[in-house]
Length: 91
Image (tube, rainbow, N blue to C red; front, side, top):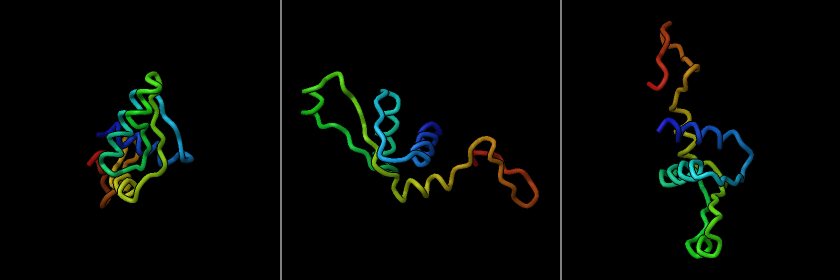
């Protein structure tokens, strides 16, 4: 889940639309899309059959749900203070 949120954070900080072609990036974007955190276009099965070596995903936008999810996550090195105490990351 952390890597997915890091990918979401990277997408939110990037000018969109963006195209990703590495297998790892595609898999992470597909998870984010399934969770409703991003809007992304994936080639249809027919398109993949015509060009079997080409696997890409185009990220169009981060959804409202995606931005809300980003606000709930604390990352290492982003310690928040609460009542004078350090709050551990990923709480």
